[in-house]
Amino acid sequence: MFKKILLAASPAVNTQTAPKAAFDLARRNDAELILYHSLPIGKDAWCTFDETIPEETLKQATADKIAAFYAEDLATIPKHSIKVTTGLAHEKLLRYIHAEGVDLVVMGHHTATIDRPDRMWGSVDTTIRKICSNVFCPVMVVTNAMQENADIKRIVVATDFSTPSDSTLCYAAQMARKYDAHLDIFHVLDIGVTRPNPKYYMQDMDVFTGQAKERMTRFDKALTGISHSYECWEGIPYVEILKRARWTDADLIIMAQYSSSQEISKPMIGSTVIQVALSPGCPALIVNYRARHCM
Image (cartoon, rainbow, N blue to C red; front, side):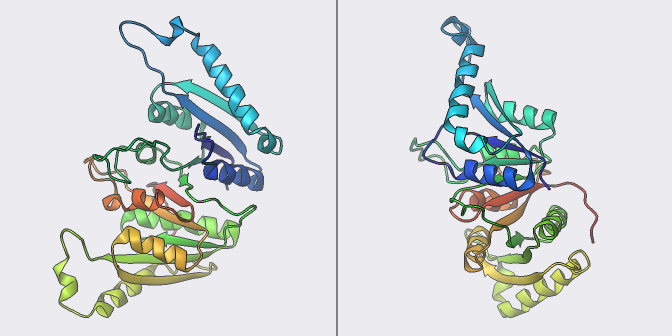
């Protein structure tokens, strides 16, 4: 299913969850693997780093270090390459992804250790957020270490019945057929935190969960031949999605990334996607909207 995988290689050598997942996926799919890293080097009116060391020399030295660090794993992946650039990470990475036709991006969680009280966990200015909003291929965010040769046998698909969510469900169905996995389609009735939804306090919650499950049955046609189940309850979306994945021992969470919002401060599904992706748990696969017809 994946033929060209790009790993955003982080210099945080103590956090190797994403690289291990990317290596495993590349082996399983006989895919080409690209290890990509962008050096945060800038220029101003007074000087450039070329005056100290040629840029190409620095990039080659970095590529050599990456190759040496991952030598053991790369020896088992015949089709691999290392790409090092300079500049803003998300801008350079987006250009490369589009130019090379990458069909899966694998990234890790935050690597910054600076304490910033003005920045919330899962805020919209993360590199992950910027990449997810501007690529057509899925982005897998890996926080916890995956088991060696772990298989994808149970997938939680978060849906809010929107068009992007429907498209993501079609993609999840393709993955389920590929890996012979069970799909757990899950919807959360967002009760709100700062702005509670008054309609949920006027009837028994079972009425609303029943309506949501009944609405999910329209997915039956797209899921023909795939093991699947529907579940719904109330709560804060990102918390309940993580709980559902944990309680069912899910191997993967798949969510839709909305790319149509014009407000940069609204990080798609109320930041649910980013909060789930960056929280400890199984890998999260974020799928940007593409028109898919499967239902």
